Amino acid sequence: MTRKKIKLAFITNDSARNAAYKKRKKGMVKKLSELTILCGVEACVVIYPPGSNSQPEAWPSTAVAHSMFSEYKTLSANRMVNQESFLEQWIKKSTERLEKLQEKNRRKELIQVMFQNLGRNELQNVKKEDLEELGWLIDQNLKDIDERIHALVKAYAYGGKQED
Image (cartoon, rainbow, N blue to C red; front, side, top):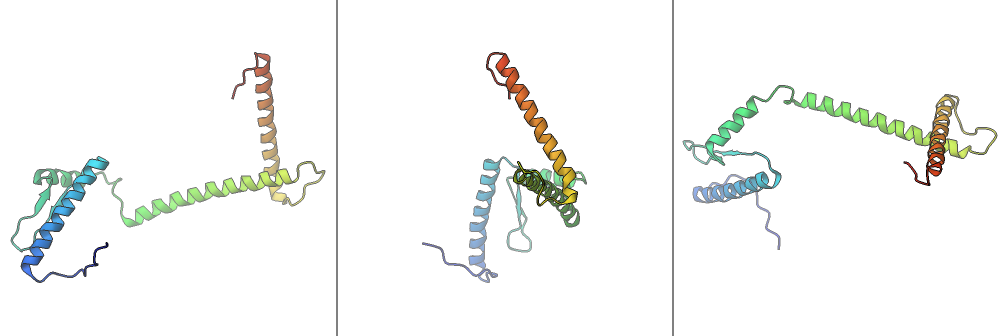
């Protein structure tokens, strides 16, 4: 049975608010503890309890929280990124991936054209700008075939053992 969806709003009743705070704090600390154990990461949480003159509570301890925050502040500037630099890096990586995929697709298209025209006396469906690249691809395939034949002949000559 699913739980009833609760309305997220400020709890006006003080005792109900404190009870909800304690219950949710306990749940949050449990989840954070599980996260640190299961994933092997360092984590801390600082919680400000309800009330204006209450001291913040830290998990696992105040000293650990202080050391983690000071370590965070001293991180080198190259690891800290703002949204703009993050997006620039993401766009650069995405552009590089796109270029690699376009090159891969181009090679597959040329291979398809090569096999479609295999055994014909003339090339069909080939653009002028594709001819040079198609020639290079054919030369590369012939070179690979020659190397494989040489390896098979060598393996046969030395007792039937193949090299890959």
